[in-house]
Image 1 (cartoon, rainbow, N blue to C red):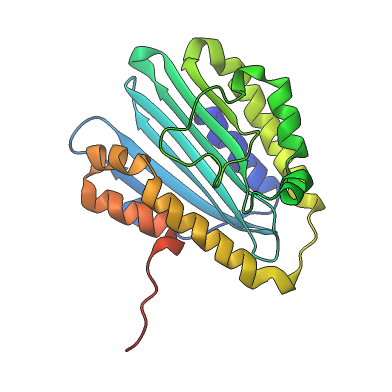
Image 2 (image 1 turned 120 degrees about the vertical axis):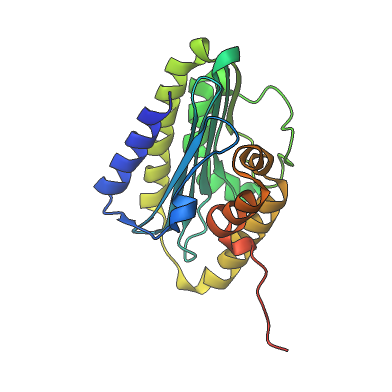
Length: 237
C-alpha cells in the first residue's frame, strides 16, 4: 500500500536536488529469518535539510510500514517533518501519524510554523486527534494539529493519500519561507539532539523491528540510522 508514498517522497527529493547519504548495507536492507519480512531504508540531504530518512517494511499481508523524518539544517528553527504509517492487512487496520514535529511548544513558535498543518487538520477531520498517544507525551514533540487516524484501511486509504501529498506541499512551503540564521545553530542542534534521545527511548518500533530482525540489529538500526544523535558521545579521560 505504501509504495506510492515512498515514490512520491523520492520524487520530491529529486526535484529538490537531494543527494543520497550513505547507509550501511546491513541497515539499508535486511530480510527476516524469523518470519516473512524485508526492511529497506534510504537517506538524503537536501538544501536546508541536513538529513531526510525513509524506511519501508514489507511483511506481506500481515504488516506494511512506512516511516520518514526530515531533520532541517541547524540554522533553521522549523519543525521536523514526521510520518508514521502502519497497515495491518489481515485486520484491515490502518494507523497514521503525520506531523510538523515542533522543537518548542511555546505559543509564538506554534503560531509561526503550524498554520499549514492546522489547515490540513481542518480539511481532513478523520485525521483530527481523537485519542491519547500511547507511547509518547503528545505535549513534547507533537503539535496540537498532528494528523492522526486509526481505523479500517479501506475507509482511510484515499483520504490518507490526499492528506500525505498536501502535507508534503505544506511542509515545503514552510521550509522555503524559513530564513536561515547561523547564530541559532547551537541552540537548534541541542533541541534536535534532545528530540533524538527522547525518540530513541520511546520509539515503539524498536520492539517490532526486534521481533522480525533480532534485538542486536534493531538496536543498531535505532541508534545508527533512525536517531544517530542518540549515540552517547565518548569523551577522552
